[in-house]
Image 1 (cartoon, rainbow, N blue to C red):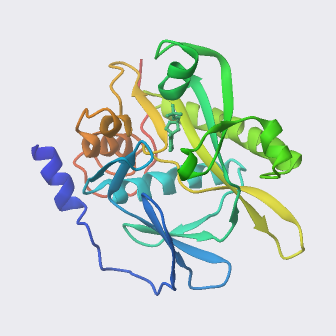
Image 2: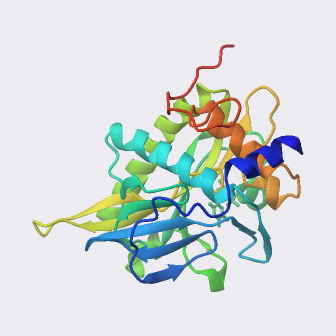
Length: 276
Ligand code: TMP
């Protein structure tokens, strides 16, 4: 509880500083709000403290979550960018907001799984925690009314949600992202069980279109298990009523080197390797 209170002091719900001029509010999702950016072709993403699960049926405001996800997602997108993954990320603006390129979101959720958990365990009767024979990429159609159903490439092609080239790009980028992030998290004693990505179309000045990683990558969109204790350090703490979500996300940020051990804003020295 003391740690929780400290986290709240650290991350006041509203920052009020360096709040750059945003344009019109374009869209409010379950965990984020999108505004027009200061220049054409840009957006400001605001990370809310709202937590939802089961397509919005379960809802809670968890103070500090938005700030932590903004920081963790920034860190991961920067790392991926350095490793040659094209992303929409431009820069973090303040505690809750980041500036991104405006892309046309492909209406698919791309899930990569290394270990069985969640819906694949239910669907295929695989015990949670069992390592899968290889990384598995799944596509879900982004549609809240339908509960984001699992779809096959056949549906994606037939309904024109993405071109065959885009599907290839997404699978390739998702598997590369998996390699990079599995290594990054393993180095800090965390197992990357699964995660969800979203992609967008970036329209380049020369008339070309490229597939780029968009949305966020945070403990809201990943399953992260401590390698030693198997403790869940992700949104399953909320989905499964385990409590301690802010402490878990703070621990992920601390191990990534984003914040200091005492929770203060670190100089971003990078992840600290865990031995053994
Ligand atoms: P699932 O096992 O419930 O299908 O979730 C797989 C991964 O995708 C897990 O890391 C959580 C993430 N996810 C989201 O980011 N958004 C969602 O709406 C859902 C259902 C899962």
